[in-house]
Length: 313
Image (cartoon, rainbow, N blue to C red; front, side):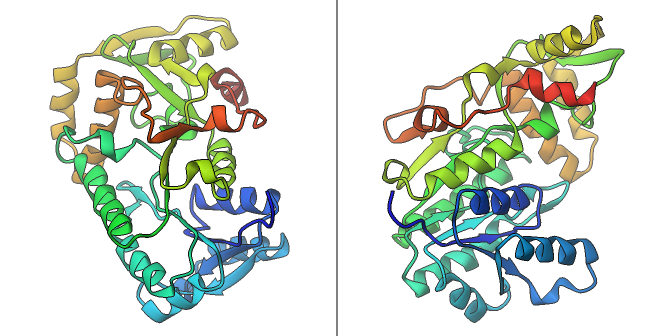
């Protein structure tokens, strides 16, 4: 494989970012983590950054509000991975990456840029409904800027984060599985794809020096984790040794409930709608211009949904 690339991770203290830092270090990359000057008194982030430093990461000061600092940070590495949040219930910062694109373009040394994607492939969501389509539209704006600037890229489509989806048995607003009842979205039979967040990070880092993934979309589709909501529920029932009381909510009922929520909730619920009523993650074949991570890296032993659920027993 030769010399491993130096990696800069932006958003390294976030939900996925901290896992990317860990995976990058574990896979032997010289790892840099962007540290904002304006971090203030956020003690948890400071301590996390210091823990990264103890593990061998290098902290580099920079900010989206300081173009020169971004350029200087980017010049120190070969690969940039951005993990800023695109989830409205946390914070939606996807378009901030346009500033990063400008910095990468000016620096002129980056071999690969991985923007904040990691969920549904936005290129497949042209028919997404409002207001949730804003996530996909913004990501496509960033993609266009990357490609117009001629920046080498890899887009990672990791589908459903297990922590958000598997833990709550695919029910919006739930991150722990019930021992009593579950609400099925529609008939509960649309296939989805679930990936452990640590596995997302491991696969992502493996792509960065792989010529097969250059200027490609990489999909994470672990075969054992292509499941419907009903199948996830059945795995949980098997583990707890009892059947849950089941009810269901129709597509129209779901849309009606969604309209009564605030904007951030509506965005998130729109994503549930497309995944669990339309099967948007698994209803298409991967084209020749894309790759599938579990086929590329069969040595990575991914976490199966059934094993993921065991932690809740």
